[in-house]
Image (cartoon, rainbow, N blue to C red):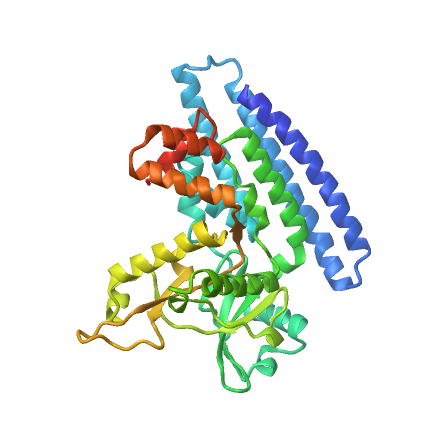
Length: 399
């Protein structure tokens, strides 16, 4: 039955992909940039074809491999395990070949061991969690020139051609402005700038299809992640404004890099360069004279303020995006210790929580702390977990 459903869903996915491809090709035909139009003509149809073929292949594998096998039989379980492995390998190949937001999707899948089959999680975790594309310096120059009107060594006094970090959507280079300021320049990968519209449409289809096949998987918010770096910059300002206005007692201890608006566009973001320790680098944090327990307290408090008071939450808080440095205006204590400041990086993905969601979420945590089974169920259901999944939903928070 699951195989038949997936096959039907995949047929719809293929049709929608074809329709999306038609719209994309229509946009290409009216493009004002011939070179970009040519590049899109050669890359977008291929990427859409890979998606359609992969989805159809996986659907047929489930359909025919599981056909006729009793629902709860040992043989069916073994065959389903094998199909999961084959399908995960096919998805891995698709994500690696298409790159960009596809790798981002694979990285998110690798974190969902409590929602999707283990075979998918393990495959994505082994191959994609730490795998990110790196654009060549020539490609970086192409983006910088297109966005800022000159080569990196013209726009900046100094520009390091070797990136200090690379993610699925962009990479970061250290540079110096002509007035001597050290900055971090976030440059979108060229394939993201060329195929973003088509990739977003197709990844949205993947996420929606997975949600229908595995109802507990709801990562449809993934497609909300912004490729517009100016939106990211505005998010960082809103985040700090919220701390200043709504949480002044810790506003001094939370920071986001200054944005250089005259050197930023939707595909290139120039920010103040900030050095520090990743939040999980305990030894470096201690070398800075900061106590790790104070870091843990600050991070917990900062995100609690965002979730329960601001309703505007940074949704990509992995270690590389949480930097700890000594509070710039702070002094060492008698024991030589310094107060920490949390620097939030990568503001591309935020979630707004309405008052009801924040209230129910707070009530859920209260119920969990006091082992209130009725309160756990009631508030889990209010948050959308459903009568049958509230226990799993609550357990996720205690991992």
